[in-house]
Image 1 (cartoon, rainbow, N blue to C red):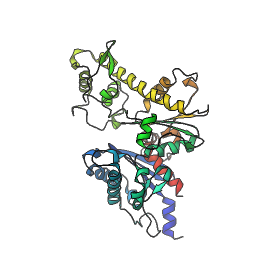
Image 2: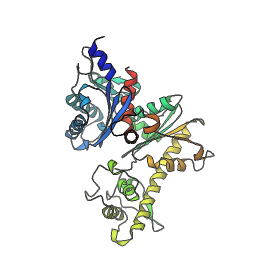
Image 3: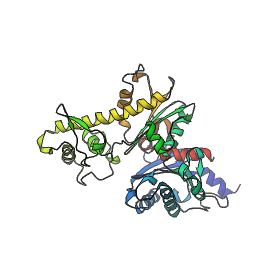
Image 4: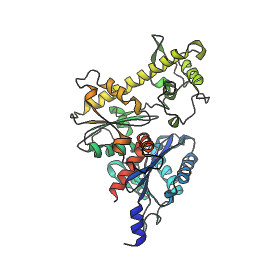
Length: 385
């Protein structure tokens, strides 16, 4: 073994990527430990230049990018920039190869022709860019499987509840294996394991058709007047660092503007009620979303008879909803929520270094939000040691 190869193995930088339709999330891993995690807004439906800009920002943050191995998962192939998902996988991969250096690559390894970019293909493991034509379906929208597989390796039996900005993943695992009924998006939508509800980008008219205002249920306006971010921003649960996309009216995100958007959902103006009433209204929307997610979770739990050792693993920027979602799902169950084992992906699954760059607690919090990129980096590192 050459001195250079020995040093490369000792350093062993891996960057995990989760290329979504609205965000790029990335994790910097050194010798199996998370050093840093970051997220950039990336409205991919507006053009691939937004992905290239996010990759450039990552390079500015992490000088190690040029000598790292890259483990990639994605969901961005779904955006309407692409004619179909296969085209999306191919073009996203091409953008990554173009920006990150691409194969063959001698930067990160002394192996002749070694490739630096590796795509997570779910049950088909890892895929080089040359194999995309045959394995694009396994690569498409597999980020949830990376997170669930990592959680399963840590806890054995349980359920992953990843509540994100746009979607929620409800994934069962048993005996260290993911046992979900679906693998593709369409299969997961059918069995309730994928729910298009999130705490930032979901149009409120998609959350519920009737919501209580001053004690009386009202029909809601099926217009994109407000999003779920308005609800959780007004309540105070949404971290501003996760509130990266424009509001429905492209206006301010201050509290008066937030209340104004919520008021439009039932044909009112913000000035027609007091701030406390609008706060109650936001809580009614929260209750509606908790009920929807709780009902979907109940369906997933009913499909899997998990034992008392099962662990409920929370992840995502909407992890603050998980306890209430669980309570709703188990409201008619003999199993009290107080007896459930709850865990956080960021602190209980991810291995965050004591010398993490922005502080261990801060990086754990970002690992919680950006779980798929952390999982991709960790799984790749374990598979290729």
